[in-house]
Image (cartoon, rainbow over all chains, first blue to last red; front, side, top):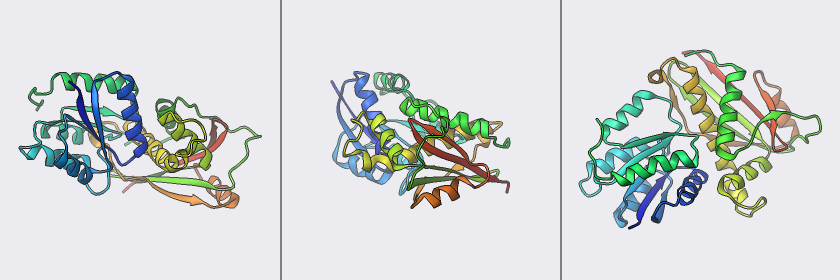
Length: 132
Length: 154
């Protein structure tokens, strides 16, 4: 069975980089969806069944924290696994994300290997409770 | 937060560039043609102080960076549309990396803004940019780059 991954980042270049790294890792992804910010991501979720959201934090319109809260507060989308890929330097904000239910974090710049190491366990443990 | 230094800025920039595109900044060679027009990217941060990181480089470097990241052939038609975006992400990652190194604790790290882009329209604008204090001029893949970070305490 393949996964549907939603990539949320205001940089199209970064979305392309992440997509390519996941493809090179040989992960069973059947569909990649893309969004430039949180509002676009929420619109994608209304019409697609998504297994994993990989989101940046700093974006216009709606940032990654707001997106995660909106997704996890909606019973229809709450089961989706969310991980953050960001240059965010602040540890308090990362703790806030974990408490909100975000399951993984990777700091930019990241290698394709680090991306694979983030995504594989998340997909294998998709329905595990979040760490608080 | 510790005061920033040119060495720390260069380390952060080099790490970002290497990890994103396996490119390596080096000292500017005498025979590198300086840009007649350039993209200038800025990103601010605030909290415990405020500051701004700026990066200027020729459009050709942005296109090469985008091609490398996205595995496109050099000179691909799509490269131009990804050029500024790739440079903005380079700035974003550089400042995030630098702020981690400047903060005594990750909990003290400031808030980053969103990157913005402007154009240095001619050689005089480039010369004016690189003449400002704290500007480091170097090159990568044969293209000139200028980077600086300016900060002020609140």
